[in-house]
Image (cartoon, rainbow, N blue to C red; front, side, top):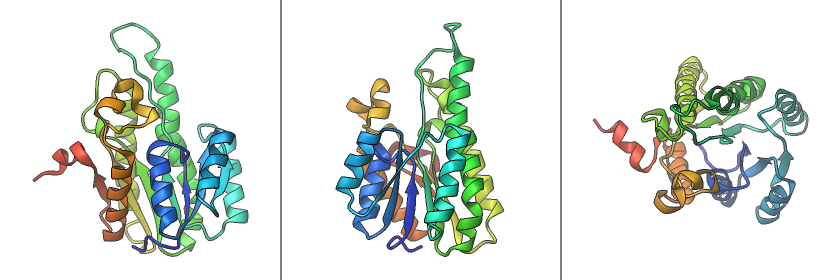
Length: 232
């Protein structure tokens, strides 16, 4: 598919993987709708990525998803890509008798349910436009859960399954393609607590792999160590 001259909404686009993707796509002439919760980070990002548009919102909240979808439908009817990147992870132990249930509710809400809802809200617009794409960011944890992030791993496995079914459901729609970006541990603020700073790959490497896959219509995009799960 064409990776230039699109209008792209990226959630969680002010740092880490989201920002790296935004930078790469901006350099190719795409207009970026930059989503984040922090106004200062949003301003920094759109000052760097000239011509980009800031959309401040917490997509974990249903009313915020409805507001953003309505704004996009009204002011950006030509939007044809959404990259569902925003996520949440807690480090905790299932053995501790702590609050795994409450933590899991928050992770499932943002990492899975909010993506289903936001995609559903914007799908009619994507179907009406050309060269449309939905990119869901899952994780190596969807294949191999880790004891330090047990409920996060489960939420990404759920998102992976949904993404696969969404792709199958839209297979007959030639103008909408569904991609899954599957990074390993990445050196971002998001993963600092679980060793990303010491052992993670760069977010730029993840972004480069995604752009290559998009141009080739490679719908599953394993990066780094995740590729071991796709070896024949």
